[in-house]
Amino acid sequence: MAEGFHFLHTMLRVSDLEKSVKFYTEHMAMKELRRRDVPDGKYTLVFVGYGHEPEHAVVELTYNYGVDKYEIGTAFGHLAIGMPDVYGVCAKLKEAGAKVTREPGPVQFGTTVIAFVEDPDGYKIELIQRA
Image 1 (cartoon, rainbow, N blue to C red):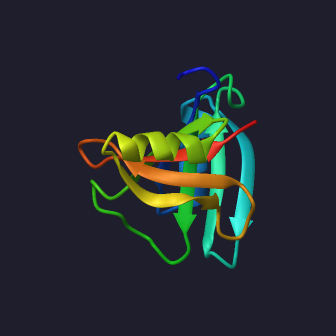
Image 2: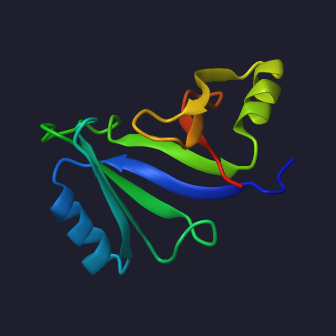
Image 3: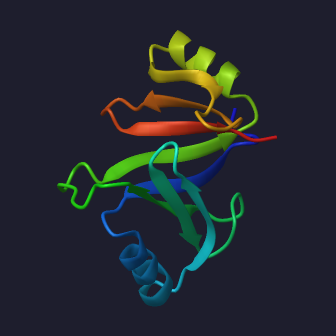
C-alpha cells in the first residue's frame, strides 16, 4: 500500500510570517521554496525546506490574517501525505474504522484533491492527491 506515498510537509500556524520565514531560512538554513497568498481565504502559505517535495519533507508556515498569537497546542496543524488516490485511501480508512474529518474533494479556491483524517490520538493528517 505504501507505493506512491510520500511525506510532503508539516504545517505550522505562525503569528508573524516574516519573522518565522527569517527564522527558518536564516537560522535553520532552509530555503523559501514557494509562497501563496490567498486573500479570499484570508491566509498566506510559505513553504520552507532543504529541497522540494517529494524528495524532501518541508514545513508549511501558515499565516491566518488577523491572528497575532496562538497558544501552545493550537499552533500545530497537520501532517501531509501525498498519494495517487485520495478517494480510494479514504474508502479503505473508513472500512478500517478510521475517522475521515474532511471528505475527499477539491480544496476551496483551487483544484487539488485533498482529504483530512485523524490518527487514533486525534492528530490531523492531510491526504493530498499526487500523480
